[in-house]
Length: 256
Image (cartoon, rainbow, N blue to C red; front, top):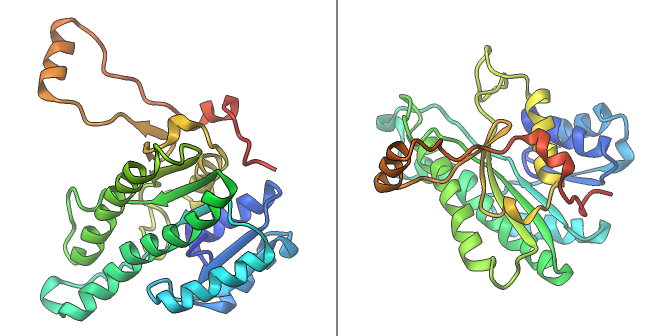
């Protein structure tokens, strides 16, 4: 998983190790990665790899080292950069640096992990996304554009892979505003959010392929105006959303 050195990534890594998984965590700060392993209570289950995911050469080398530990069956794309710069303070280069991490790094990790998953005949990818693009805040242009595009990336991957590799399950998950360095002090405790993310990552129910989740609930896909008018005319309720609690009854063959 990426971004394992702090915040949500650290909480997700600790949660996965608590469920018996061996976790390979990528991050830019080796010291923070070491702290993640120590905080888990099972440091032997954590392998940290210092890596800039926007650098494909570094990333490829890290994945090669990860494969020496074992096959990659689950990928959580969590790493992101939020520089909080006004657009007038951005240069074309600085803007694209953020895009290269948030979107490019996610795409590159997917491409490398999918090779292992195709060989195994199954796999699970959970892309941590955001709705920042729907109502961008000031000073968030690069972040909002790149994180919004991550949802599109999930859909594009499903469109390309689903028919040929139906057991590679790919979903998007928006954990909400968290109490982390990138979030807000009144945000959600990342440990709470991580419990939802761990359940999603450990479930390979085919119904999750292409699904979009916000916090602990699945968002229904967009519906046409015609469908909404028909629902109102027939007095039908909108499609209900699934919840994380329901995943415990689903197939979890990726669970150890």
